[in-house]
Length: 83
Image (cartoon, rainbow, N blue to C red; front, side):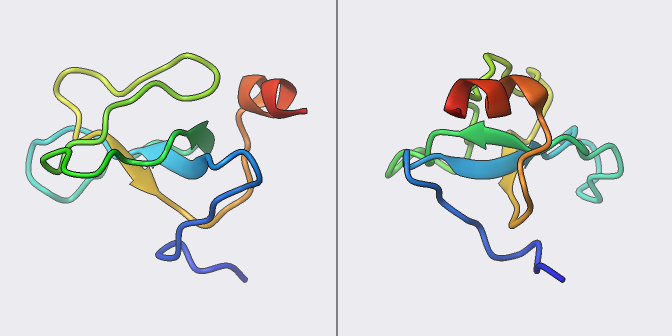
C-alpha cells in the first residue's frame, strides 16, 4: 500500500498530483480522484501550484491548486503523452 503523503517524481521530472479542491473550508471534500502528471512546483511560488498538467488541464480559479500524491497516474491523456 502506497502512502499518499510521499510525492513521486518520474524520469521526466514530473510529479504525480490531483486537483486539491476548492479553497472553501480547508477540508478539501471535493478533491480530485484522477492522478495527473504535473511539472514540479516552482521555487518561491508563494504556495499556489497551478501549472498545467501534461494533458493540458489546470486547477480552477477557486482551487487550492495541485496536491502531490504517491499513486500511479490514472489520467489516460497523461499516460499517453509520457509513453
